[in-house]
Amino acid sequence: MRAVIQRVSSASVTIDGIVKSSIGPGLLILLGIGHEDSQEDVDWLVRKIAGMRIFNDDAGVMNRSVMEVNGEALVVSQFTLMASTRKGNRPSYIGAAGHELAIPLYEQFCAALSAALGRPVGTGEFGADMKVALVNDGPVTICIDTKNK
Image 1 (tube, rainbow, N blue to C red):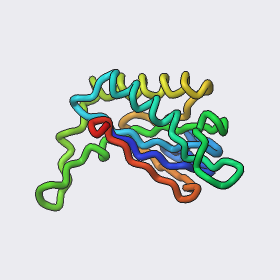
Image 2: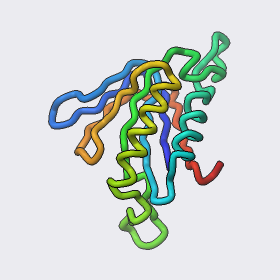
Image 3: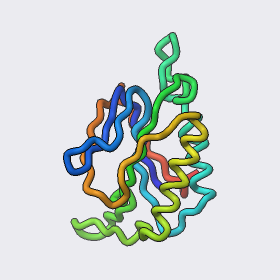
Image 4: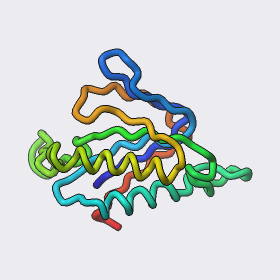
């Protein structure tokens, strides 16, 4: 499982001209799911993201988690995060999980993150053509792969 985590002032997902989800200060999480991912990856990644200290404290030091600042979260599925660029100039997406595995894990990730944060998590729509808008705060962008713990 791969995630790109961005600390944002705001973010939204629009599908067919309609805003599906929007958040204020918090995290935009782009989530890629691979063939070998499991509930164990979901659990580890949720704990890691919920506790990651990337929000400023009173001294301006990144020392607070999204939970500590009562931040929001928006999770967008993104199979292109699983791209392999080893050969040629056209990425291969063979490492991305199919719908039968990816959808349940995406939904489990969103539910687990919502439980960890104690608030609903905004989502995109799996497989839809989504327009993602964000104001990256910092900028702060972190990449995590559960296979590199």
